[in-house]
Structures are given as structure tokens and as C-alpha cells.
Amino acid sequence: MAKDKQRFARTVNIKNRRASYEFEFLDKYVAGMQLMGTEIKSIRESLVNMQDAFCYFQGNELFVKQLHIAPYAQGTHYNHESDRERKLLMNKRELSKLREKSKEKGLSIIPTRLFITDRGFAKLEIILGKGKKLHDKRDSIKEKDLKRDLERINY
Image: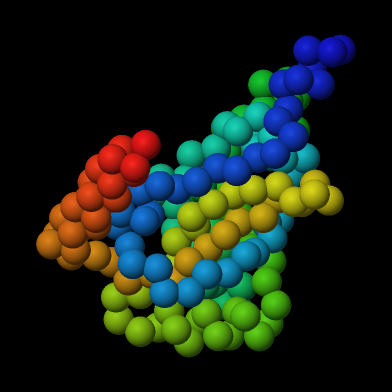
């Protein structure tokens, strides 16, 4: 029983590091997710891959697609599908604002971080981003390298 308690992490903070490389962040939102019981257990074990995930509107609702949450190991026949579409829970005002902005050419809605609040709810941090060109990606790599070199010199 004690091993089961240690299996679940107290704080979960799963990041999509690739998103900062591929996109320029314009706006940031936090949305709840509609999950099944075995999905939250897999999230607590950090069995999530959000590399290719993206968000889209279907009607007046926002969904996240290709967010891979691995099946729960101790799940029974009630286990969830790993790549199913999940509904995001946001205010109507936020949804309408996000819908209007996302209609502009070149803008995408990308999940960047998945975390669990103090109350135990899984939240998804999403950004409205503009895709970077190749030369922009090179510039961001140069900036990271310069920042790393400066930190080495300071220590």
C-alpha cells in the first residue's frame, strides 16, 4: 500500500517544450479538462505526451486533439482511449475572444503545460501562437546559447 502512495506525484507539471521553439506566444489561457477517472490517475503518474497536441473549435466548444494520455496500468475494461479528443472548459467570454483571434491567418491554439491544482483538478495552459519561420528559430537558439554562456561566466 505504501508503494502505491509514492507512485502518484504530489505536483504534476508537464511542459510542451517544443511549443516555445515552434511558436511565438501571443496570449495565454488556463482551461479545465473533461477527463475520465483513469485519465487523471495516468496524469498523476506523468504518463502524458503533448508534442503534437493542438486545440480546435467544434461548434461553440473547444477541444484538444492528439494529447496522448497513456492507459492506466491498473485500469479494467473501463480504461480510457489514449488519444481521444477532450473537451476544454472555459468561460464563454474567453471562448469567444479566443475564437475571434484564432480566425486570423497563421494563428494556432497550442497546449503548453498540463498541471494539477491544489484542489486536485487537471488544468491545461494553452497559448494563442504564431508559427515561427526558420530564421526566427535560429535567433531563439542563439539567444538561449548566449544566455547559457552568460550564466556560466557569472558562476
